[in-house]
Length: 83
Image (cartoon, rainbow, N blue to C red; front, side, top):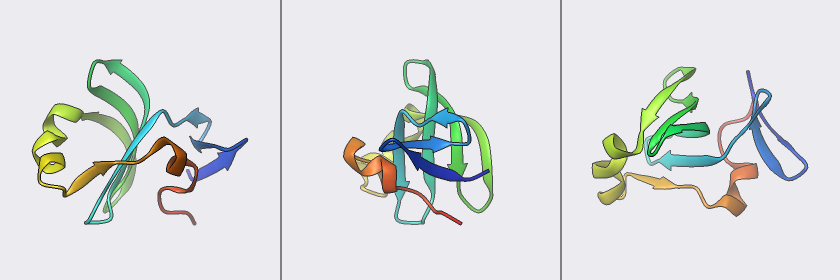
């Protein structure tokens, strides 16, 4: 599975990426569906690349410490690691 840009928008496979985060450690989280407020299903590029659930509340301490930050919507189409 790879990330790709189509019509100026970022896709993970066939799924439109709605929101993204990146980190100093090189991890990326791409939310394709907000299951409930703050709980996302999406594609994660970390030590492994995989689909799963992640919670913004659990990310909050790292966001406050500037170790993880939201990716600006205008930067989403070029975000993440590409093969």
